[in-house]
Image 1 (cartoon, rainbow, N blue to C red):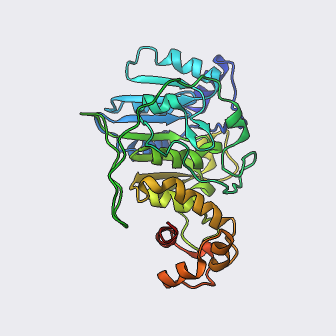
Image 2 (cartoon, rainbow, N blue to C red):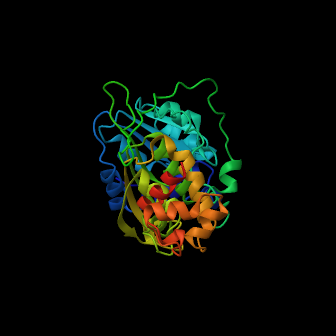
Image 3 (tube, rainbow, N blue to C red):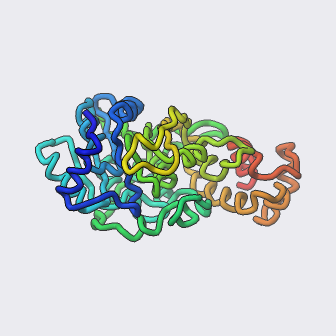
Length: 342
């Protein structure tokens, strides 16, 4: 049973807390929504479920009722983290990480990498989309809020992380194999009402790290960016990266009244199933996208030339329109252009 607005307010009062805008906190008060998010995660026995921004634990309670082997909750709010620690003290399948899910612009919290487990592949530790401008107040161009980066209030795990072995090299166009899991283990999944101020970079980093299914609520404008098609106003480097790392599905638009405090705009329930087309070239492709989309209004020929690529040769090899703009090229075409630069 999802917590009501009054119950959430009572929990916050007991914890000496209140909704904090700098953490992007909007609490779910719709019982049907809590069930929908959980169902969208398709949680099976043995799965490890990550919940970022558990708040007062209303979704956490639903997740603990699934056959998941483990629920890893990441909460940056110290007051709420203390409450959650006490609330789930008797649950051996519950693990709490007090801190930020992101350790930097393009890096996951190492405690999360170990707990999930999501150990990084070689060369992927600092992958992500760089330079994309976000429309949300208080965010840097990378999509990570300055408050989020500044408020890492739990020390990271120190020491060497033994990465998963890299996937074998694949032929051009062949999809990367799923990341290896521990023997007998299920998949790692994200099921969360994501704090709006870290959603875009976090989704990309989790996909790169090997999370197989992500089911989450987010502002509708963010969902539109993730699912945007070439030529759409919302289309950008984040759209391209996510769609080449997974299959994006906007499942439902959600009214402000499903949350408290009610956001000023609609939200959406999104599911992304990981299907990695980038493999070990994810970092290089991310840098390439940043170069191209920094000149998104220029022609493809000018954008490539400005980035010191052999524009005419690339365009001729792929039979592309030299007057086309980068923002009009679909993810597969942009990947093909990138392959010509290697």
